[in-house]
Length: 332
Ligand code: B12
Image (tube, rainbow, N blue to C red; front, top):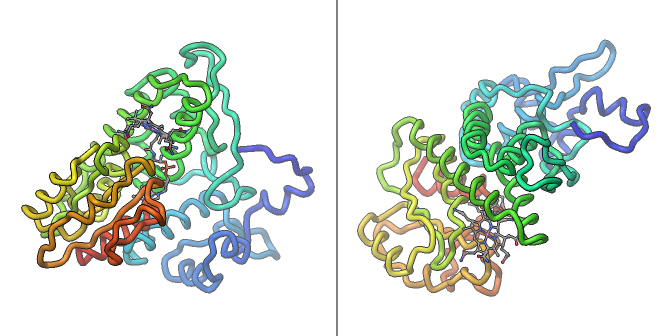
């Protein structure tokens, strides 16, 4: 866990855990909601000192955050609570109670000597637990199978949305920033990308049989090679028993139009990582089919000035938002 500059005395009350009202403030939910989740589903604070209110420990916070994300994604609260209780959250590798939701202070993590590929390199990544540091080290060492192992374990223990937000994204961004600032580390980025795609694919393959009758199409905008977020969406939906077709990187507009015509999907998501690839015509040229298709665009490439002309197209905010909207589109 990270060490703050506060004195030991100042740290003490927070180190003992957070109160309901402090957690509610940080998460942006009503204290009454947290009390209901505690009473009905047992997702509440576990720390108790005589004469004081019960406090949320780091593991309680992780369980709560996991439940919140599943609920946002459209999972009924009772099922979300059950899934969160089944995940194995230990205090040792989770969000310290002194850190906010959901991001932490950036932190330089030195690469362990055994993992150094070129000597003295560091990957800048938000200071999370040992799993993020382990993943960064394994990627830096070009150890594809160790990356897959760390990711697979986290998908199984904490689910896809948690692992994407807290493990994959910080390490990916660290690796991307290392490349943009030094021009080095393309091999690290490729190792990590391959491992993330492989582990997400494994998670999809091991999921239960999908229940949806209409499929969901996930594609990159033409000329965009950043397909990993599509695999994250597919894996998170597979956890909700929703089947998808990942049409992958750099899909020509005519190919997406043809797939929509042939398959009549419930939803289509077009990912653009960069403004240069966010071409609105890919959406504008989609054929009108019945029943109507929910069309979503996602990724930092989409901006107010390059959005498709149709007003019904929605720009999703993040993974949980994309999953929630698609769950609703397929009628889940
Ligand atoms: C992996 C990677 C690659 C891989 C992709 C492999 C693959 N199969 O996906 C490869 C090697 C192919 C690649 C190529 C290039 N890349 Co690249 N790449 C990355 C890297 C490291 C991760 C990409 C990723 O998966 N991002 C997704 C997550 C991890 O990050 P995020 O976008 O910040 O996510 C948040 C939001 O998007 C938001 N969100 C909003 N809506 C939605 C919706 C959904 C569904 C989700 C999930 C999230 C979401 O929530 C997020 C968290 O999930 C990024 C670094 C970065 N910061 O992203 C660079 C990065 C995107 N690449 C970059 C560049 C420049 C390139 C190249 C042009 C390099 C080159 N000269 O060849 C080419 C472009 C090729 C092309 N035409 O597309 C730049 C883009 C700069 C810019 N803004 O224009 C980045 C930012 C690196 C950098 N720091 O400069 N890249």
